[in-house]
Image (cartoon, rainbow, N blue to C red; front, side, top):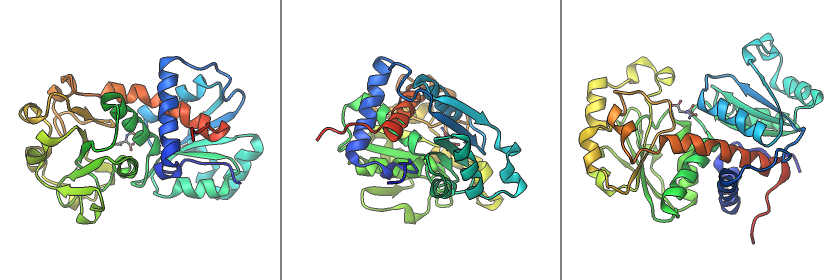
Length: 304
Ligand code: NCD
């Protein structure tokens, strides 16, 4: 058996997914001793900018006692023409056992995992997947509602370019959450619809029916100029603001993976609103990542 990797949420069975969340909750209640990954060399390889994910992984790695190596791939030999396979061989030879990778190309994490005789954790590849973000979102939802089945969650905004949306759709569907995607046709094509995933264009009509709304940033860096919606039109139709906050139920919650753009997908009031769970999300991220590291390297007993 090759070492296990986490490239997207569906690399985990439902039982494992729930076990990871349980484990993350337990780590949040009481930090484990630092010997879970004692002496295991973990490399953070971030080819794309990251604030939350990179810091959160680093802290998670330290909290399970790993030997953490972070380096700027801009200065790596991949830029000198070395293939992924040769880089993977080199890193394994040096002793690296886990690589946490973020890359602008969809599928990069898979290619690395195919070449590397160790564990790979996808920290975001292009527009494809970002499994640990989805896990921390699911942890935050479960903390709030104590269940998944039958919850109604809307993801709003630039779905087309969002690896966060894609991984969340996979995880939420697996757990029985009803998902509604909301955005303009240029950022949300019809082919995102599938069993359990609806597409809507009218945020106001949906808001009062939601348990949770996840707001997404417009990913300007991934959008061809012509596809960018007019900002005025976009904020009128899709911005979460004071008026729309009134339409959201008192017991609903607001999620955002960050980074958020104040004045675009949300206004200041949203971040100050008691229903906002942004801070809980980033807080949970560390524990989820500790649990994923533990699962991949040590295995986690799954209750029968
Ligand atoms: C996201 C990402 O990088 O995919 N941020 C994150 O990891 N929390 C979303 C984004 O960049 O908008």
